[in-house]
Image 1 (cartoon, helix red, strand yellow):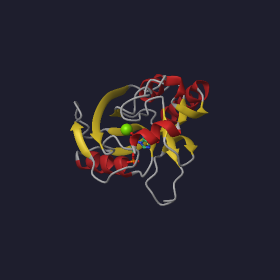
Image 2 (cartoon, helix red, strand yellow):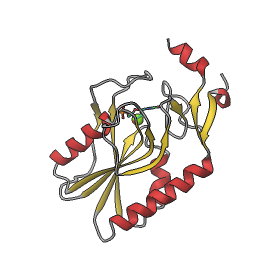
Image 3 (cartoon, helix red, strand yellow):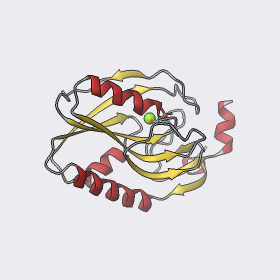
Image 4 (tube, protein in one colour):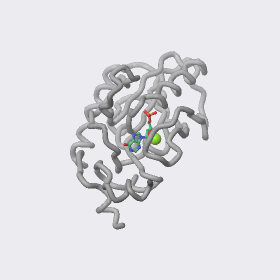
Amino acid sequence: MKIDKACKEIIISEEKIIETCKMLGAEISRDYEGKEVTMVGLLNGCNPFFSDLIKYVDLQIVVDYIKCSSYHGKTKSSNDVKILKDLDQSIVGKHVIIVDDIIDTGKTMKKIMEIFKVKGALSVEACVLLYKETEDKNKYNAKYVGLSIPNAFVIGYGLDFQEHYRNLPYIGIISDDLIKEEN
Ligand code: IMP
Ligand code: MG
């Protein structure tokens, strides 16, 4: 299938994504003025959001990455969060902002935040581009959220389906044909 046929509907344009990055960057810059901040991207989904977001953060930040896995290639979340690549730098005494593409069940983010607090971070907050509106209204939410989306599986701009489609410049709802191929 050609990549531009992977979405049945584009829900967030490139322009809207950049506008949202600017808004989040300004908010973070204001809240953390004068503080030492480490921004941690959750690989691989944080990319390219992380790269765009940090351009609009007007602070002296340290950039680091962590990689964990919870989806195992499916479109439904599983409970165990495994650390596949840990931080390179110490976060002891640092204000940490974890950056990811999306909050779905919120389990990944909640788990990583707990791990970072145990590691000795002074404060830990999360920033995501998307928040998925699911039935669970009590799930963990990030302090910094770009946009809310309906409860559908989305791809593009870092979000993958079986490791594909992260390179789409926009975000869209996955086509029914691709979902059928999984089942
Ligand atoms: P959570 O732990 O259920 O919040 O899942 C978060 C992770 O699942 C994110 O980092 C994404 O990588 C992945 N994820 C959740 N929803 C979607 C989606 O609609 N498309 C692609 N990946 C998703
Ligand atoms: Mg991810």
